[in-house]
Length: 325
Image (cartoon, rainbow, N blue to C red):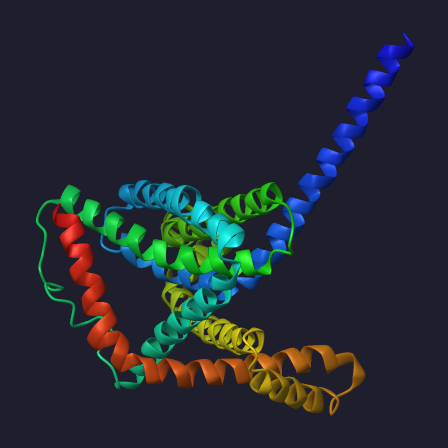
C-alpha cells in the first residue's frame, strides 16, 4: 500500500512539473507571438485578397487550404530550421532577424509609396492581367500564391519568435516555437475567415432579420467592411514599419552599434517625463514606436529600388520555374 501511495505521489509530482512546463511554453509562446505583431497583422491584412472574386461557398475552403499550407510552412520547414540555427549557428539569428526586419520595412514603405504614387508596387507583375477561365485552376493558383507569400511572413514570425524566447532547453524551444506556429496560424486565419464572411453575415442579417435593429446592423456590416479592410491595411503597414525599424535598431545594438538605440531611448524618456506620471510608460512606448516606424519607413524607401528591380523579379523567376516543374 505504501508503495502505491509513493507511486501516486511521484505521478502527482510529474504531473505538476508537466503542467508547469505547459504553462511556461504557453507563456513564452504568447510573449514571442506579441513580438511578431507586425508580421501577424500584415498576414491578416494580406490574405483576404486571395479569396476576392470567388463564390461565397469557396471562400472558407480556400482559407482552410491556405491555413494547412501555413502550418506546413511553419512546422515542417521553419521550425526545424529555427531549432538548427539556435543549436548550431546562434550567431546567425541576429543578422537573419535584421534581414527580416529590412523586408518588413521594404514591404511597408512600398505600400506607402504606392499610395503616394511614387511606386508601381506589384502592378507590373508580368501576366498580371492574364485571366484564367477555369475556376478550379484559378483557385489552385491563388492558394499556391497565398502559401508562398505566407512562407515569407511565417519565416519572419518564426525568426522574431525564436529571438524572443529566453535561452532554454532544446525541447522547451521546440515546444514554444510549435505553440507559436499553431497559435498564430489559428489567430490569423481564424480572423481572416471571420473577415471574409462578415459581409455575407451582414447581408443575411439585412435581408432576413426579423427586427429592425438587426437589419440595420446587417446593412452597417456590409457598408463598413470595405472601410474596415482599408483600416486593417493601414494598421498592418504601420505595424510593419514599426516592428521592422525596431528589429533593425535592436539588431545593431546586439552587433555592437548601440548609438541609435540609446538615442531613441533617451528621446522617449525625455518626452515621457513631460506628461503626467500616469501616462509616462505609454508615452515612452509611443515615442519609441513612432521613431522606429519613421526609421523603418526611411530604410524601406531606400530599399525600394533594390527590391523592385532585383529581389522581386528574381523571386518571381525562381517561383515561376518551381511552379512549372
